[in-house]
Length: 415
Image 1 (cartoon, rainbow, N blue to C red):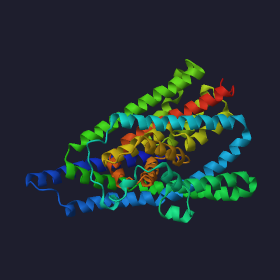
Image 2: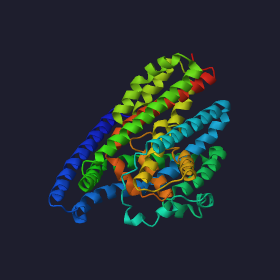
Image 3: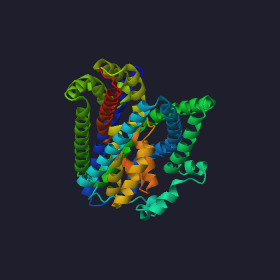
Image 4: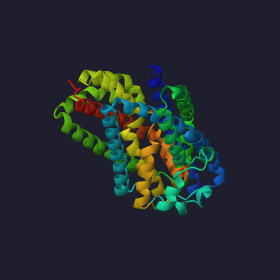
């Protein structure tokens, strides 16, 4: 990553915050005007602002299927190569699996405990009004919905789970073919990076979308809605604190008091990730600091890059937390079985997504579509996403540091 990248990310964050503030001010002006004349805000007044957010959401949905397909194929194909390195690959994947499940499960438990979306009573958008009856689908429906009849149909309809299944088969087959498949894997890798570049371009529209979304929300509901936002942010950061304690406790079991030294070494990379909203911005410094801490250079170069695709603990906790929050906001009841199904879907769809700013929105969009929850609910989170993304990025750095240190300890590669 070039030195200019963190600066660009900081600039985008400032623009998003500015868009949020401008949206709040504009929304207050509109709300006060129509409250004064004792009439609801007409749709024709809010439509121009709604369109701004809708365009952004459409652009996000446009890249969901191709991004998930290309990144998963490349990730799974590389995983096939990991198996050839024996026990190190197995231990690494085991840790990633446990870390992913813990993060997702913690997010699910906390959002059901805090219930930040209850009481919002958001009206379901007209285009989605007929779909929510299927949110609590049966096990048979869920299993039957997993396997695609056509990958082209699945991608055209943004059926992300079916895309994942095809990607897994394709990736495993490509990985098993060795050098013959290298040209295909390299091509998909290039495509994934192109789509991630597109993601960066799309995110440049985020400040305008935030302005439109916040104006629409505040104009309709007044400043009282900000209480829910502050509650959501506070409860999410409490969740990150609990996840940090869990990770540190597990690390203590492996390296004892050296956990404090580890935290001292990774403090600077975590701050970089927090301030730039990107765990990728911290990658070079993190690799250097882990080697200085005493991790074997070969293990660092093996585990850490994989972790950036397969082990984003902060982002994964957010995915269950945010997805269920949106369902709560629309008064869509998700029973325990459906929530577990959502967790398992996210176990797959979160893999291969790089640690770039707001990449979680792409995964959440696909998950909402899979469970028939209105994707328009993402607009609820656009205004506060930069604040949430800072914590997610820092936690991703911590989670991957812990994974590298633990695997190094397992392999007697920790000086």
